[in-house]
Image (cartoon, rainbow, N blue to C red; front, side, top):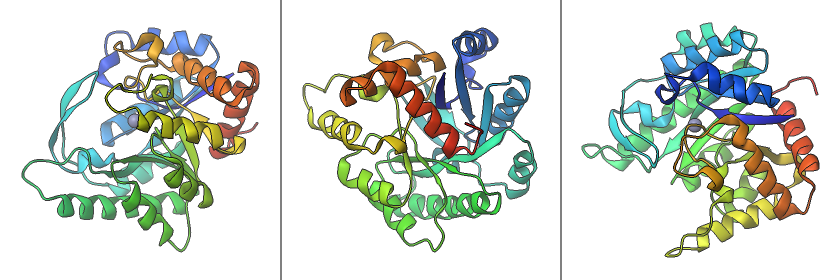
Length: 280
Ligand SMILES: [Zn+2]
């Protein structure tokens, strides 16, 4: 049994074949955490979780949705709609039994709107992320944390908290120095299909640093994810991602750690269940 700890099958990318995509992965025995990124995608995540036994939901506001900005990714491009953290709305969703985490939320200094300063963006992101932390602690739920180009800022913020939430740093792609700091604070790290990518010819170091983290992370702190529809593993790169392809992430993790596929599958699924407080 595999656990895709981070996917977005409620997104537009699946509007024509959502049910078929979910069934394919469910039939392969993949548990899923459907992650919301703003109000409507959080609600849709909860609705899917209510509909399917092995689907769970996370709710929250992604930092790119705090300002209206144009987002260009390898697989899609869209205009992000501006929202802030609507406490009552999320409190209502959090009552659902299958909500297992708060997020995705966090800091993103990669997508900065042209007309706003970096400082202003960061200040708003910090304040909304603080709301998510308070919310997660109040509801006793772990967090799904997004961080892009802002690890120093995030680590500084987390290290100043009196009470640390539990959670995972989703789509971890940074180095061991940052990883160690998150691990010391009790966080899990989530690996995606990015670990299956070959190093960039023009800039091979980031991939080496990432694989160093894959190689050194304590076995009880690793979780795997697809971040579908994004970050499709190398085997299908360029196409839309699907939750069952989390098997490629597990395969790469097993290879680096010299584990059998079955061992890596068992370890990552148990870790996800522990993190999300589900029965083992
Ligand atoms: Zn995501």
